[in-house]
Image (cartoon, rainbow over all chains, first blue to last red; front, side):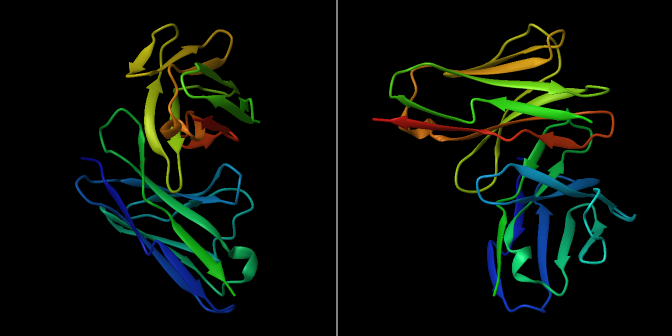
Length: 116
Length: 110
């Protein structure tokens, strides 16, 4: 149980285009999902907290107009990187907390974005 | 500012060795501390600790939390090459967000 699926697992796009990454909780409902970004050999940096049915809460320094987050249902959150640039190339990981659970986060497999 | 510091940053051992990874934290409104193992992709959950002095154990891995001294350790006994990974600790505070440390890169040589 507690499986989080993330898609796509890798994507290459041209500079200036937008990329959407999906995060789904497959066998549980997640009222809250989190989006992290990880640069090579660095730890996970929290980008935003995604709440079902409401606006996402962004961490300081994260541009909300660039990283659009939508959490339309209890099992799906999406992250759209708009007008992507090479510096947006990174490993993006989503996680979900089991509603009513003890608080542990379950992670998706991550999405590696390369912007040319 | 809340922060999590892990040490060492990297560690190389031989199979069969025992390792201890450290995680210290300075946080407000501590709720829980979690350990994750990250290999090539996303982190996998190991332990969640909320109470001091109670050891959590899973096979060769164990972890304990000291809320007075604000640290946690992760022990791995009889290490195997499959234990090679980055080990991340994270805390959860009042906001329910998980804040991660920098990680410890463990390399287990045959």
